[in-house]
Length: 301
Image (tube, rainbow, N blue to C red; front, side, top):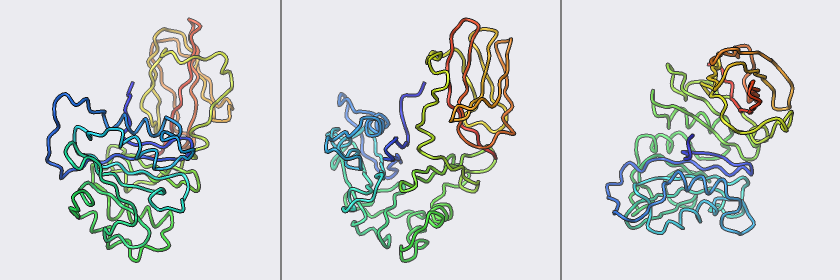
């Protein structure tokens, strides 16, 4: 399994995203025991109230990063968004520019004079506040021009600004938008032919993402009795079982039994092409009396 996170959002609605700091040319030092930036992101998201101030906001992310007082093994940008708007803009959103040489940590919020109009914050892949570099790339300049006066930025306008001025071309694998006030994650994924930013997004409720399916939970464990792929799935979900004779149930997040199928071999396929986009549970019951539950995401092209 994968133990790191490139980006994520937690149940409280705190979201964190990692970018590479592409114009940092320093070098790391041996024996420093640098913490992988992706582990830091997991700490900020998974350890409740990391800084102990009884609030869930970007200061938890800042505290995790500051605990790595000799920086990180390479140059990174971390952006974070709080679940709620705070009286202080610096607590609502932040951009951290991180490096393995001093200054190790440089933070900016909407107050920083980065030429983005209005109460807005943006990050691409170059240094802006670190050493007051102000290194604007074509995407940064595109957003500066595309955002206009920076006022009345709706959900739809935010998506279109990022789509039109901040995409990464054909290599754009994922395109996402977190809306804390609505507890919604909008996500588009490269389909192998088209980049993510030109595709329609699927809206996921954070409440659904973090819900637990308690149906038959007493019969289930977390042991890996099978692997499933691909996830997200568009049409067929493939199974590799550890043994023969398995019963598979497809359930909604509310526990409704949508489909049941028996597989007698070590491999199987479940047709999900006619299933609406969303999040589902796959419950697997093996003949060896070992059972598991897997959460999968269904998306259309």
